[in-house]
Image (cartoon, rainbow, N blue to C red; front, side):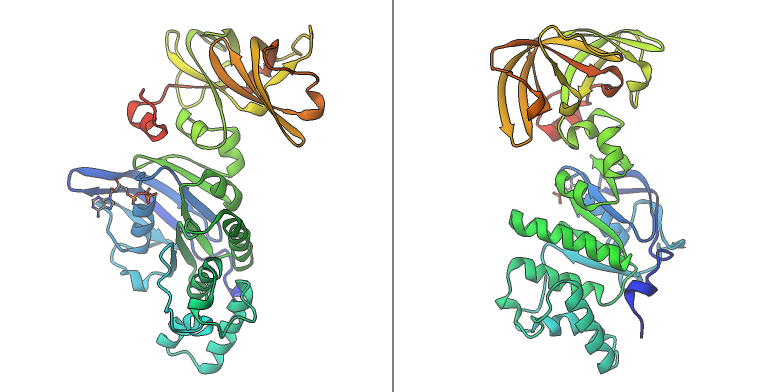
Length: 384
Ligand SMILES: Nc1ncnc2c1ncn2[C@@H]1O[C@H](COP(=O)(O)OP(=O)(O)OP(=O)(O)O)[C@@H](O)[C@H]1O
């Protein structure tokens, strides 16, 4: 008898996507996507609607074929391998459970098709009912379950077949926030126990950040960046990723000089920053750029306090403050640009709307990017 926790070691379930493109007629919906997904990892495809996440998942599953490029699973070329012969399971938003079967019968269904012995089916179904947190509900009809419980049945039904890869296409998007959070924790926990490779699709950046080992940020059929949630938040490689993950303040500007130091002229003054803060571009004098700052990098200077070493500063006016327990969000007007600073409430002092202050930030905490192209700007409802 096998046990998924011991047999599904991280050695199987790797996916290599090599320069894969997909076109429908003249429209290329995926362009030269290359991606290595390590066995046993939890990887999330994240991006705005229509960026190609589901298309990539369908290509891995074998529902559709790439126009160009190749997909390997565990080193083996999948070009000639039909969906049912690939070592994958799938969970979709549309659950397609059998409503008149019980929980246990739904989970047992695939094993019965495989003509597994009765004792093995009973053991496995029992084990996976436990694993997904449905202990005691094996005899319930599907119609008598909540949305979250149904999603757990769908998960168990796929996992009981012990695929080395599980593809999940927005499985939580129909659930309310509370249930969604519970299921996010459950999914992550189950993935850690089984070490099955999970490829998860969402357009929700918070969900992606919470749940994944690695995130693939996509837009318009291109991979914009691949990394851990921390890497992508702290070190976005372009303005699209910076805006898509977390909150960011943007100051448009122009490079006056670009050498070991960048001099960026903005409406709020000229900032001298180390050249290393420029990402995904070769900065040259005269370039239009966008300087980005995360809200927690900005400090409000008290009274006549001077910025510390390595800090740069600017004048600002407080527009509003919002205390959220230990943190306060301060909305600022920085030379006509609205910015947000997040401060520890107990360190804020008496910041009042209308007050003129100075803000400061570490020079190396800023990021400088090329402006968005018109097609990328559309994802944010902007016109470049
Ligand atoms: N069978 C098809 N024929 C033509 N175009 C298609 C087909 N399937 C998908 N597309 C197009 O490919 C693009 C990518 O679609 P895809 O479903 O992969 O996006 P997505 O990122 O999963 O979006 P969503 O989050 O809205 O599901 C879209 O512009 C879509 O209209």
